[in-house]
Length: 300
Image (cartoon, rainbow, N blue to C red; front, side, top):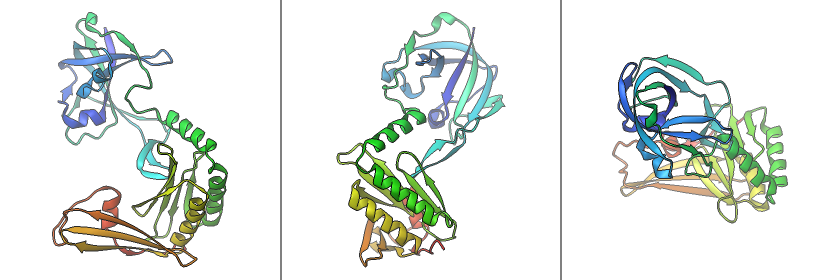
């Protein structure tokens, strides 16, 4: 009996040993039945399935075929740190061996495994989407759209998104989705990008804004949405600056945005324990801020 087994690249990348076609292996696996009736086999890497209550069993088998499956991703609208599948067909690449999990860079490993004894297979588990696992991107998007449509801010934020897309679409790529999130990506070199998305996990709901790697949090209400429009206008005009200065052993990052009415908004981040004279490496949005400082060019 042969089964088709899936191994997630992110779990393999941690510390999973390598393997190759023709190798005899002993792996702990689970059988998961999805709501549409499809049964899939998955490796119980790092006990992620057994700790969720899914029955697993150790099986002996021979690796017959291996394929890498890689999806294409793009930054989520409103949240450039989160990457989501584009919906394009996945790239499938055959291989004869998989290296150990250091610096592994593939989404999924699809293995054809010939079992020595099919009686070793675990019981089938009806896979409950409410188990501790990430929801499918489509399910997340549907939930976000529903929450947005039920919010008091839906009409006003939708009008704002349409307005900024019309005003700045000729100088920036405007990505607006049905969940109220937006990304404005200026084409001018040295200009600052603006992203916003909504967080309904807290009460009251929040409007989360990211400008050139700096994060701002506002209530999801009418004054904040009006101010978002003013912020976009100021960033488009280049009326913002991001400064760095040492404070003892730490580093202070301070972004200021000058609104048209004369008010100035300020956001501060402190990187603890970093001496100004020392070399250091910080990744993510803060790392992007550290890579440059000073003023930004207007979108036009």
